[in-house]
Image 1 (spheres, rainbow, N blue to C red):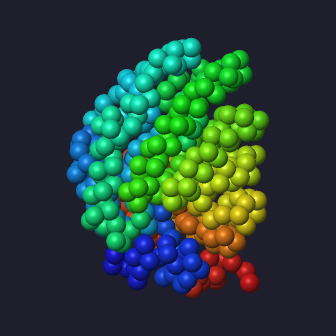
Image 2: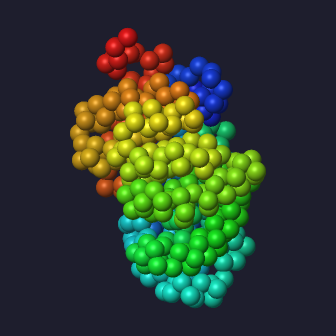
Image 3: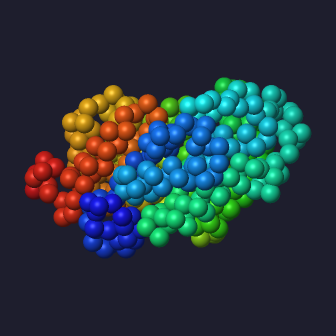
Length: 359
């Protein structure tokens, strides 16, 4: 437990879920891409073994006292397992160099059994990271896994530009790919849930910044709803993290059945609170670029204060978070500032005068 806290993250989350008293607001900066830098590893060193990656997560938790560890299966996991050509950089996140599927007519040539834990060494490694973290700090802090939603998983197999075009010209072929990607994700989700891991479902390619609301309803909503139903049936919890502008699809997203909704900074927290705050807890949404990457300590403090001011009274609850993954180029001191500000402005009972809230 962090020296400045009175509760462990697990105790705090339990109080949040049951309406109990908390020492401070739940604070969940999305510490994923920057993880290695915080503990002095290269990205390649971090991902080279389950032990290294677990050590990086545990080191971050001991430094910051953040309220969740977010282990990365990632957005490209399905495509990687099927045979994508991936980059292998020394000190940045691997990216798709060449998608395994060049033509949707060749979909049936892919062996989706390669995505299962019996056949995917990388999935085996990530599950082991989860087990190590659970063993060493799981009694204190919840463990989550960042994993793609259906549309982003499909886009990891087939180039996103081609898939967006095919959604108009050959929708039945896109549905066939989504069917296979969704079924693969179901099995992977359940593997993590069996380890006691929270699902953090991220589907950036389905953002309203890329898809029209009618495209979301046709190509994303049915599959996301299936996935969330699978999570519930398996006894798991799903936090939906949605990148980009979801102002037009926010009600549809909530209707898919996730337990919580994490929003990007491009969506105003007050808007989200007024639209869906009475249906599920909201997480967000300090700007990871304009503030955490480019801002000063004072600007981080002000952004945290403003985000709490906007979200603290959301009817189903509010959790402070960054609006998206914290890029590895962010000054680690700004994560310190994020957590320090959360302990000042988010201390319970909230000091409304300090937050600038008029009674």
